[in-house]
Amino acid sequence: MQVGRLRMQAAEEGGRERERVKERETKRRDILFVRAGEHSEKHQRRIGVRVAMEAAMDLMRRMPPTQVDTALSSLLLLLPQYSSELLSRVDQPLQVAWDAECLKHYLLCDYNRDGDSYRSPWSCKYFPSLEDGAQPSDQLRKLEVEANEIFAIYRDQYYEGGISSVYLWEPEIGGGFAACFLIKKDGSEDGQGRRGLLQHGLWDAIHVLEVGEEDEGLAHYRLTSTVMLSFTTKDAPSVSFSLSGSITREMQADLSVAEGHLTNMGRMIEEMEGKLRNGLDQVYFGKTKEVVFTLREPLGSLTATSATGQSLQQVVMDDILRK
Image (cartoon, rainbow, N blue to C red; front, side, top):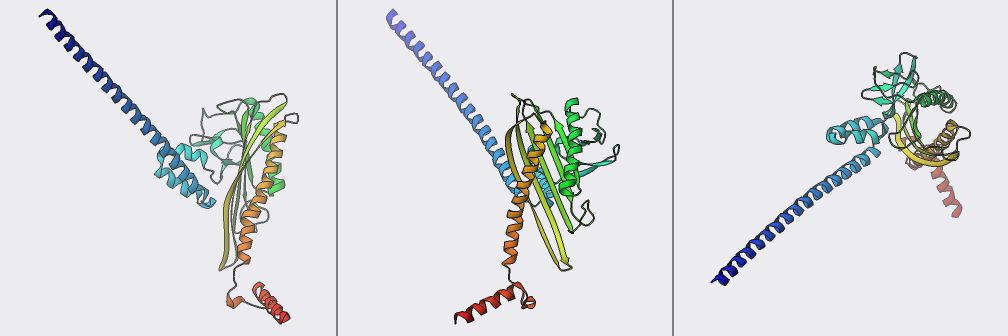
């Protein structure tokens, strides 16, 4: 009898142990399922963010510069949770503000903004006034003043007018410093241009430079440049032509700092702007000329001196000579 009771107790204890093991396994599986669900949900959120941003940036790349502000405002309404990333990644046409202290115009961008105020490179003050706005260090401010003076000369020589601004700041991560060189040229009849050959014409150039710490007399420079162009011509009351677009390129170089950072940055910007102008000439103007020159002329304008008329004359003469 005693042996039987011991066996029954052992069996009951074994059953309870098996139930405890099964319960532990069930809890472990539940925890794994929950973690897997959380991971899947986070993964889906990350995928959703990436897809949404790729679609938004793909849309903005196809927008003409004259419609960038409108398109960006619509995207901010559709995707308010990505507003900070959109504002930092989308290049917008440069806006102009007035420095009431130095009596000079300056350009607005994300790099001189603090809240709703923008810092002027001339007086180093924010408009509207901001007491605790971010300021460059004394050393960077001295370099910034010199860069604005030199870049104004560069602007006058290459652009024959316009507005320029240069901003310097210290990056949050890593050493060195960063700089932003801006140029805005209005080539319309009532703009800052000296020729005024266009009914409407804007050129916005944004050059962002990241300068690494000096190492054995060398510094690493990384330049990202964007140019936005839009213009409209009107030769007759019923004839007008519009063209707009943007182009972005990047350049990196390790240069000696013996002649100073401004010299290196100026040469890189000058070289990059030459490449961008050539790219715009080949891509936009070259393709536009090709399309325009292959268009057929209306029958009413077909004359012996027109391009189409001359080409038809050449075809007829070739046929006559062959016969």
